[in-house]
Amino acid sequence: MAQIKGTDVSVGYEKRIVAGGINFEINEGDYLYIVGENGSGKSTFMKCVLGLEKPVSGSIVYGDGLKQKEIGYLPQQSYIQRDFPATVSEIVISGCLNKLGFRPFFGKKEKERAKEAMEKLEITDLAKRSYPELSGGQQQRVLLARALCATGKVLLLDEPVAGLDPYAQEQLYTLIYRINKEEKITIIMVSHDLEAAKKYATHILHIGGEKCVFCTKHEFIKENGGCLF
Amino acid sequence: MSVLSTLAEYLSHSSVRNALIVATLIALCASLLGTTIVLKRLSFIGDGLSHVAFGALCIATVLSISEKMFLVLPVTVLVAIILMGGNDNKRIKGDAAIAMLSVGALALGYLLLNIFPNAKTGNVSGDVCSTLFGSTSILTLSDADVIMCIVLSISVVLFFVVFYNRIFSVTFDENFASATGIRCNLYRLLISVIIAVVIVLSMQLVGSLLISALIVFPVLSAERIFRSFFSVVLSSGVIGIFCAFTGIIASILFSTPTGATVVCVNVLVFAICVVVGKIIRKG
Image (cartoon, rainbow over all chains, first blue to last red; front, side, top):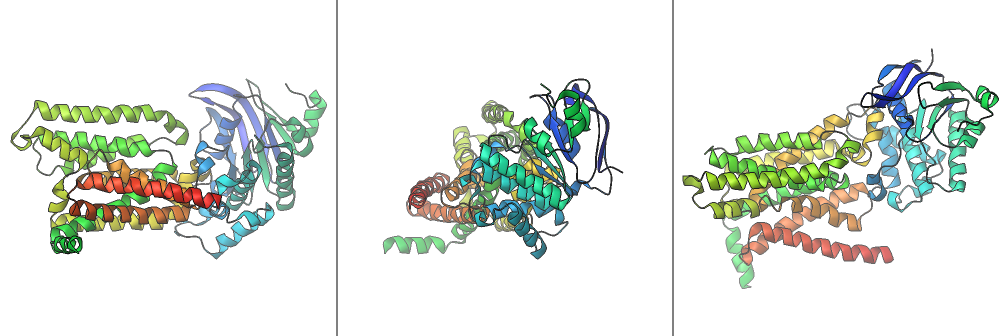
């Protein structure tokens, strides 16, 4: 059974459907790119996959023993965070919260997990730094480390490279790719970057309008030369 | 020497000691809650709620309810839940609603007091003034008041300690927290109820116009200097206690209005923190 499977999903705001007919199946270790124009419902679709919102119709089910608490998420940055007084290690370890159950405080296990996540994303030396003082690329890596703390299976990323300079973009892509390959973590990413999609993705989901297309990267490139818009 | 001896004389009265205990405890609670309110950009909610509490208090007075808290507390809690409901994305547009509600409640309360004066509210302007700016009632607290306040403050502090990690997560990034299975709605509900309770309690200390000062100033001061969430929470509590304590002592020594003095000490500490923060950044 697939890790996440969607049947005839349509998403929208307040009953108005912006994207419909979405059928997809994601298996362990897949790397899915979700592409589409602005306002086509990509982020809303993402929230439906996360269970934060309900799809207007259709169903999204988790399989393969995947639970809500095992999904990591990298949201678009909110305006609150830009000058939030918090250190890198405080933010990263907060990703372990869903492992606590009824315990109030983090134990050795969570601290170890946060340390590992910081090592993987090469931010160990930033641990005591304050989040607002970091560069955009560093901040994204912190949030990615936090997402990694929350999951061992699936990672959802909402436009992770938006607003980063090309060097930082490339660096982040490489890190995400490595997480996908080395940890066998499924990646689902919303992005505008078709070039990166062609390079890294295993599957592509094009969202927008009545009929959304889900296919493997090779089908995608063969059918329309990788050019959508 | 004369200042110290006056102080010693005042402190020998149990009522002054009670006032000091209650004031510092309330200030501690307000400043702890203030961290999540201010960092979530909800500062105006404290203000709005205190005006709602004022409105409810006026209605209770007009209806001659003897235990006014039985009306004021539920109304404020209810409004707090309504205002804090909905997630981050939806709440941003709520600032106009809060502004509307807060002046609306203020106006309605004052209007009702004027239309239906009764024996108790013979002195309308004096009454309103003390509810708005705090009164000397902090010096006439009964032992029951003090005990209730102590119990409540301990519960608030305990809540904050036990749920510290969850409060951090919900404050920093609600989307992430709920996506990873944290019950944000529950914590938001708990926080709004506690805020309402603390606001109603602190009305007797600084009055409803000045309450938000107790909530926002300590954390804003702490934020100037400290850069981690933990140190901001901790120092905000310390600053809150310090300001309430010195404020009350000063108001006793110079016979100034209690609430206003406490708030002014807060303003002063904030100014100092701004300067200190600037020096640290440069150095």
